[in-house]
Image (tube, rainbow, N blue to C red):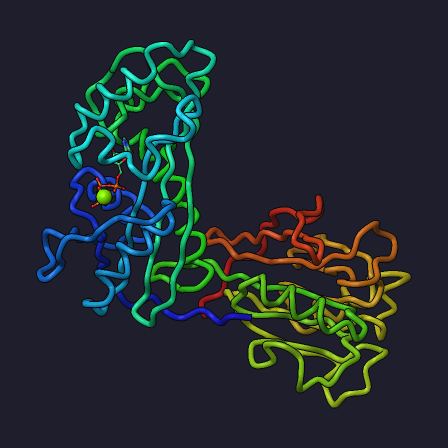
Length: 386
Ligand SMILES: O=P(O)(O)OP(=O)(O)OP(=O)(O)OC[C@H]1O[C@@H](n2cnc3c(O)ncnc32)[C@H](O)[C@@H]1O
Ligand SMILES: [Mg+2]
């Protein structure tokens, strides 16, 4: 599992001289992270970057790297364009210079309309594509792609946006991208979609100021299947892992041991405690395997124990059956077995996320990462100050 680093930069640079893109990025980064974005007009020493990649992604990486090489802050680059089905994907990576001169939007639009002159309405489908590359100061690259489907209009409409926006009709709607308000474009555009993917990836890796949510992975009963456990822990970038026992391997070799609360199950012979209290996200977790409380026949003993130790959330395993229910303001979570389900069709684990309103969300997944229709949102006692 990757532990989250703190995001420490209050601004990033967009490796672009396109002021329209810059404005869209400034809005998107402000909304997602409260971070400022500067364009290349604010950075000295960056020459012309030749965009000779065969794909949007290659160009985005090239642009970002050219600038990241000379700065010590994160650099993002956008390579975007329009692909038109009737034109075999053109203008594609040549979108900015389709009519010859770089960035002549009016000439590009005229040429596009000319090329599409004989194309009937049903065959005018097209896609706006945006590839984003973010290079972090340690050289790490994140590349994502967002797409927005639509069709080429017969004449330009609207005055907002830039580039091909007046000729791009949104799928299922009769408006062009240039007829949308900037706020609406920022919700649905190819750039907004790519930005959402980038934001998801950044949140998986970094903790941002103001991020209140704590994400806890709850697993149990992997019975020696170390690979399954490792792959789940690697994928679920969690702040903490709770293992409810029956791991049946060397406890010191458990993945992410330093951020794991683990208890001994009835099949474990390791020097690991049978019960643990862990406090995090404003809640007090009581972790036990559950066999000592006879949880296969009734939860009564465990309910008493939870009250005794003043738990807000009880995590247990043993039955291999997923269970999630609140009793008297205390939440009881059995993630099920991550390898051998019983009383349920698929193996499962659970992810608990705390919200700032004193509620927690429990979501169940299969080890392959598919959602399982169990869990829900539970309103617990008021969060305790940490
Ligand atoms: O390379 P940088 O400096 O970022 O700026 P650029 O304008 O050259 O940008 P690209 O190389 O990515 O070319 C993208 C072209 O695709 C078009 N395009 C990209 N995003 C668009 C959008 O949201 N709306 C309309 N047209 C867009 C527009 O014609 C752009 O000039
Ligand atoms: Mg360009």
